[in-house]
Amino acid sequence: ARGAGEMAEESSRDAAGGMDPAGVVQSLDERLENSRPLERDGAGGPRADVSMPGAEDDPVKDLLTRKESELMALRSRRVSDLESRVERGATELAELRSRMHTLREDFQYNLNLLDERDRELERYDAQFARAATEAEDSAR
Image 1 (cartoon, rainbow, N blue to C red):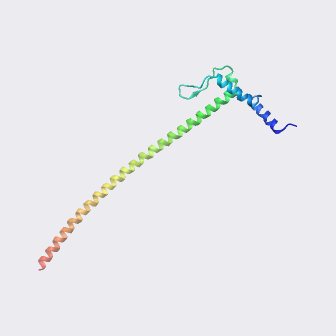
Image 2 (cartoon, rainbow, N blue to C red):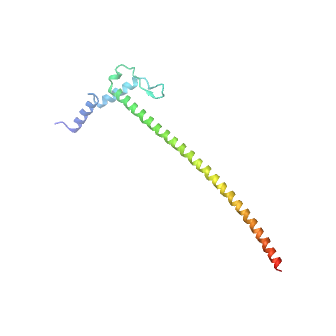
């Protein structure tokens, strides 16, 4: 009977294409040392060096390429989300500025209206005071 450790090791070997995990890591390390660094393509994203012999048959390279693609897709989606948030923020800011301008104009109009009313009340007070004085003078 085999133990759980042996079965897990065999399962790991099967997942790694028949190699034990240490061999996969060592093989990956060797491949990384022997490969050229990632280059940038014209769009600014990373591009794996696929000119190495057997690169299309290498499951580790395939996995790395898939993961790179997933990361680029996630970054692209994140950038799109951030750009749309910035756009919404700019739209909201423009709307708030417009509302602030309207409120400022309305406030100025109301302030001018109150000033006119105050001047008119002062005129009425002065007229009333003159009329009261004239009434007292004529009553004497």
